[in-house]
Image (cartoon, rainbow, N blue to C red; front, side, top):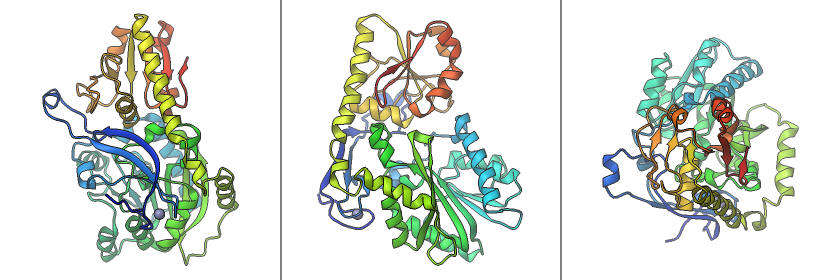
Length: 409
Ligand SMILES: [Zn+2]
């Protein structure tokens, strides 16, 4: 099968990462599901030699990926809600947004961010294709269009006279199968001097910090600023500023406007582009060798769990998120090595992780179990989790993270 680049149509011949086959990362199973066959898809990334877009290999349609029972609610992470509040305060002041402005959030999830925009008195609209999270946002009084953001949707919004002073998308840009259509839709939905901000994990940090477990089928693109600039310019947008953020192991917040808007680009754009070039992101060398880094993390994780089992230590996981599923499935970790995972989201409790079939329990069950080790799978919120579980540390539990390298505290 011949694969072509989602952005520029070039033939894809350079492999970046091969994690074997895995089920969709959010395909949690109930007890009955354990009795049925499970569908897996290849989990492989290629890099385009022409535009350097790192992308998942095509395997299925997006409709299969974002199923109605998709269970992630942004508001379950208090750190992420606080991040959204700080962003809202910053952007309202920076763009001087008020009662006459209009804001559109792409992938508004459960209203974790727009609740702050609404409290600031700025009219807003969320676009969110997933029914359960869209309903949660509506319960907060937020208007939601239950759909994927696309040119087709923007044509409807434009016909209703809706165009935006601000369009924002946090952790959605990398999850879009047709990145050209999505980008063109942003350019079309902005007012002439409107601004878009997009946050996504920075490919430079992903490689530097060996974050191969951020790879899953729903995460189609792995982005550098140089590639985003190219995608913007092909689709009627221009990059005007960029900030480096610590979220998700190292993210970029890119600011864009329409190609013909009057905004002047900040010096940050040139400096991040220069750093990417210094690291060789415009050459094949940067992309080679990541497979070996991923395997080193996997080997250390499996070795730790085998040693703990041999020594009679008890181990529990924390955080039934996509990252953990990628690692469990790549490493072949099953309940014999990690008997259970605890998670605060009620929708996941009493379910089972896809592929590994590790049971998911409430965090309160940790109080009775008092394991010797708690492995925090979503390493990006490790500080938050350790603070929540500090009473276990006092009773002797130690905390473990696997990425970028095995760490026990
Ligand atoms: Zn390309």
